[in-house]
Length: 267
Ligand code: HPA
Image (tube, rainbow, N blue to C red):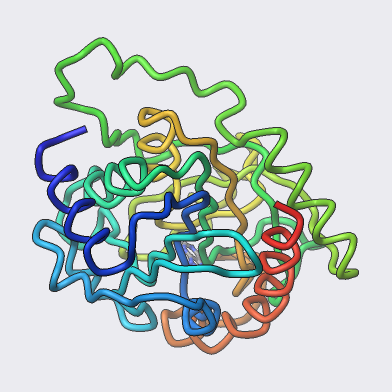
């Protein structure tokens, strides 16, 4: 933890109150509605020195702190991706702040392409593991031995069970699979998709893995859910584009919102 995160947590407490946060949520494209329904305080990233600019269209760069279904949450309406500025640790400060605010868990959401014909666009996938296909790591340069973070069970079995139970309760299928992080911002080639499919990946995206690594480094339990917006390159005739991602995200987002609400009720 840094002096900077300590100062930011203090600043956030003056605006949002001292009650400790329990769960952090990082919202991917299309999930903005959830943040709007939090009974609490919204702070622009721009008012939090050191927070990323989170410039990707479809994201809403605000931190919302408050109550959602009886759980005190910190909702990150936007994330910084490696491809924006070449920094894999772009979300380190926000996650340090989350930890300072008292959270014990982080739920990460994203948009992803599917390599599984049985998980088509509009469906969701709960990550049961990931492949860091980018070879990048947000902890490069971290000087302490804490950098040697174990990544077995990085996708926490207890949180996954709770999310699966929530999905079952609201009758939404939530298959599990492996997510591969590809740096972006260009989409993958069909050959790259064949490669990562062969290596055991079920979905592909440009985020989440650095955040999961950072969260584990900070001692936060993590789980992540992908909104499938398209079949990955070469797996269907449909064009892949950011516009398509944004257009498709709301279908899955509506389902994911229901699951997250149920998860928080039971948390
Ligand atoms: N590849 C990488 N990232 C993505 C995709 C994809 O096909 N769809 C949504 N985000």
